Length: 402
Image (cartoon, rainbow, N blue to C red; front, side):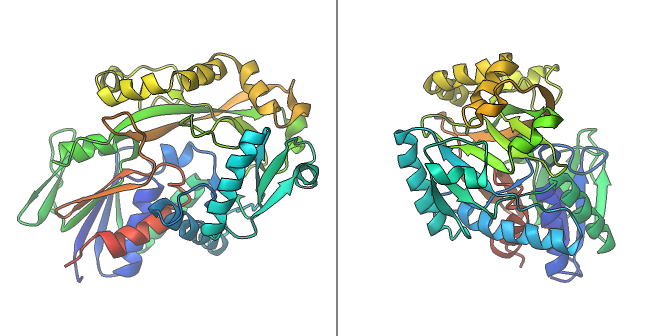
């Protein structure tokens, strides 16, 4: 492994974690991270809920379940070692109907199989012991679910990479990779080629992951279809009505989770996110249109198949997009004392949702090897929670460093 040269494309939390892991495992390796923005973690890493997921929902034995559990442990260790705020505020998943209670029991079984620590069922009368203002017929309580700032973690990892003699190349957009004689060249959007060739490359391009992969000769699917999620901060005076995280029971008929309460590491309480198609992969303000991105999903047959199957969900989400009142009303089903609370728009995240040509959403992580290039093509939630574990998995199991 002496003097091997690695390139990581993408300076979000996953790309930075892979670069750090390479430098930990192979201190003599040369590692270069390419990021098109002028700073790291400008996209999904800093536009998310900040939740360190405990691994309640994921299929036991799947990559998501395994890497989420390992990742949560590693994130906690990293925050402790680097004095980064980490708040184990806990989470309740709340059932409102008999039907939801059945689904809640199934989640409980999964969480036990995934060895989520200290998870237990609360009966209706016990919910208020944890969340005094929350109502429900039954709940699943995960006291070890936590919140952090993934942006802060990513920035710390970037500092660590520099300390370990890794290189960060900022403000250069990589559009494709070519491999010849086991050496990989990195091509920029201005037609320049990076002067050094690399032995191995890992792409962690988030919202652009499918384009970079297919431009570099990988398969065309799954494609990324962007969905935005808007969060709102509730009026400061009411933030103590909720102590930690309150989530609905996921409905298998709907592709997205529904509105929930999420405490932020700065102490504010947010409601969100909804989920609706985004008119741009990087449209964080909500008022920009990217015609290339729109054309991309409108001409993808998978998108139309997905849409035809999910019209009720789209209508439900659209109501919360068009009206803050509807948005708050969805959340107030769980905490009635917040029915009339005023809210301010906060973070808007954009989910890089991988979708197959048949319209199905890709649930597990998609990591695809092509020669000496490894593409992370899908790292949905819990991608940030799992980032340090994804890095271990890629460096130690997926890449064949011969």
